[in-house]
Amino acid sequence: MTKETMNTIPDIIIAIDGYSATGKSTLAKLIAAEFGFTYLDSGAMYRAVTLHAMESGFVKGEAIDADALLADLTKNGLDINFGEGNRAFIGSRCIEKEIRSMEVSSHVSPVAALAFVRAFVDEKLHEWGRRGRVVMDGRDIGTAVFPDAQLKLFVTASDQVRAQRRYDELIEKGQPSSMEDVMKNLKERDYIDSHRETNPLRQAKDAFVLDNSDMNLHEELVWVKGLVMGRFQLFEAI
Image (cartoon, rainbow, N blue to C red; front, top):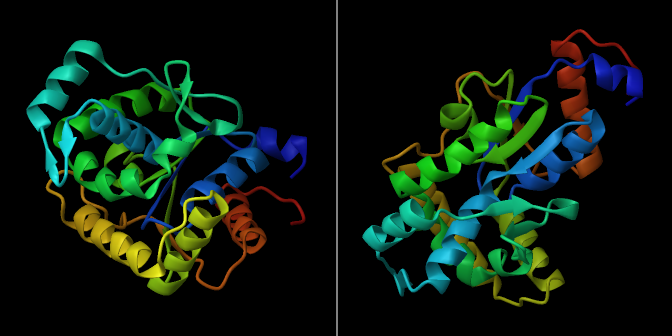
């Protein structure tokens, strides 16, 4: 996309929601780079809170000491920020590898389902979102965090495709796991995300659905560019 076209795109918020392992974050990063927007990874923020809770002893097995976590966040906060390459940090410590582990993945949905955790993350997201020209992905961005976002996408893919993507990602990062465990984790997260009491995962009524089961990233980006350019009456060969 030319610099002139990038500059004519309004200062909008693009909200991308959908199931885990659909490639939402990868697509959001590509869109941000293509349009000159800022990318915000809400999922990384929930994973950062989860990692902090685990390391602080607030998560023991399947149990979460919600009262202790609430007291800790209320008193101390949590300095989650993003550095070069959109890597997640807590303070000056890079936590990108830790938050992508299966151990964190197995606990992030129940931690993220806590209302006060969602409020904590939402407050930080709103601070960034007020600037406009942002792309944000997660589970409830278009329905709860930014219900007035000017463009909403809901990304989905088949269970088998999602499991294979997550499995390949873990292998690439040197975190081997069985396909059975990956599929089990995805289904558990799908259920928790879709049935939690606070802001469950659902498709916004005005969201455009992108099923990328049989698409590569280039095809996804072309689809989104066509959508943006058509919606805001921009004209450029893609």
